[in-house]
Amino acid sequence: MHSLFTRHTAFHAVIALTVLCALLALTFSAGWWLPCLLFLGLSLLGVYDLRQTRHAIRRNYPVIGNLRFLFEFIRPEVRQYFFEDDTLKLPFSRVDRSLVYQRAKRQMDQRPFGTQGDVYGNDYEWINHAMVPAHVPDSDFRTTVGGPDCRRPVDLSVFNISAMSFGALSANAIMALNKGAAIGHFAHDTGEGGVSRYHLEHGGDLIWNIGSGYFGCRNQDGSFSEERFADMARRDEIRMIELKLSQGAKPGHGGILPAPKVTPEIAAARGVPAGHDCISPSSHSAFRTPIEMMRFIARLRELSGGKPVGFKLCIGHPWEWFAIAKAMLATGITPDFIVVDGAEGGTGAAPIEFVDHVGTPLREGLRLVHNTLVGIGLREHIRLGASGKVISAFDMARLMALGADWCNSARAYMFAIGCIQAQTCHTGRCPTGVTTQDPKRQQALVVSDKSVRVANYHANTLKALGELLGAAGLTHPDQLRPHHIARRITNGEVRVLSALFPDLEKGELLEGRFRNTIFRTAWPMAQAESFEPLYSLSAALSGHTDTPAPVPDPAPQAGMNPA
Image 1 (tube, rainbow, N blue to C red):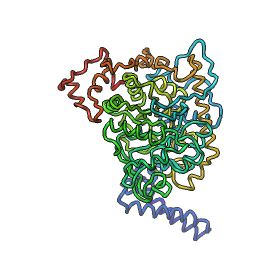
Image 2 (tube, rainbow, N blue to C red):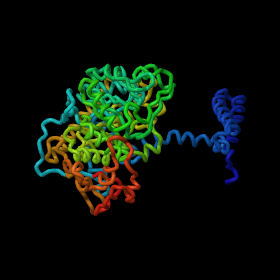
Image 3 (cartoon, one colour):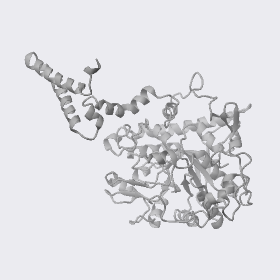
Image 4 (tube, rainbow, N blue to C red):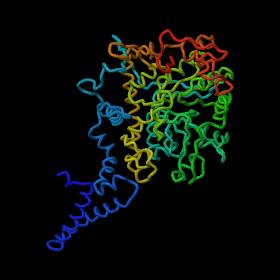
């Protein structure tokens, strides 16, 4: 029986069926010509399969071998709609996506029959509730951003749209997000692709993200232009300026928008020539040292008319962040805010090694930045934002307990305007019109409808946050502390986050008290005059420097715990 079926059986079968249908058409009815043409087409495909040299499976299995490529092509959709586990986070679970859709559409977001999560699984987390819950009269939680040198502080919502550029997103997506931000009175980060006319059309508050390409404020040679920056930064729609050092999707990696994608509209927003490769370098040219960076931030604040200026980064080498902190002390210049991006963040396409294995995850990075600012006595002057896989009110509460003053989300707001996680963002063939520059595909995204969903999602998530805080006996997210959140380490072992991420005392680092390994090791390595360490980490750990090797903690800590 097996000998009847060979790797060419399907090819021979379609040839035979072509001949049979042709005979039937000539003998009985012209209606047989239709299947004849179908089988003739498959026969010609088989001939091509045998002659082509690119795919071995098609040469070995003409005609039927093409099914492999068909199944591979539709695999993501088949898996997502028929086989995906509701709680499997790849990268966002169906439960997460459904929550955004329900809140954006003002549908019921309650769930019957108990949790789908494993409450006894490792890393399960919860917020401890109070016997006497608090009453939260208003869930429009806000924080004031603006340090001692800021003349125009901003009353900022605690939940905003994270950085996504025009070019990465379609024009309709940008307009829907910005109009939703205007309706809901929260902020929309432009991404590093510049401020396009679509960002400005509906008047929503903007956080202008400026990356190493200085798009929208650059000279022809790619250097920073003070004049162009001042012209845009002083517009009323621009509320804050964010200097992007790195991002969670691909920290330490530059980018290129290929020439065919640099349309006249994108070129106008970025200040680059249309039809040419648009390069985003991996590092800034306006400054080279931490001290120069602080002076650049002060200059941006002056040029903007006194608006809040800060920076965004994904934590890498800890001594580089410590060098920035030391530069704040050396110059007396502080940013008004810092946004910490986690390695789990990112909407844009990036090399798989960067997506999976570069950068510090958000919780560790955020805690390191928060504790450093406390340790040098500057935390009260600098607000902290956090971005990276924020979907629910509990996601926000956990980050705020670890030190964030507000949260940003990119992909959740993409879901709110219709994203279905098809993961075709980098192909230009987005099925919902969110991440494409194809005018016809964009028409599917109706701005007037999706902007309301953006505002709904924001409002309903903050409402849920208010209910969560009230259950914990709190009235504002700034009251959250690490001890409010508990985590199961293993079965039978539970710790509150304050035990996993202990607080530093105010001014502790200035006094030279280094209770934690990361500060004891990397703080002495950092220098305000350079991002380079004074000596290597290996030398410090081996004791081959003038600085004493760090004393091991009484209880060894796993990984780089910034507590």
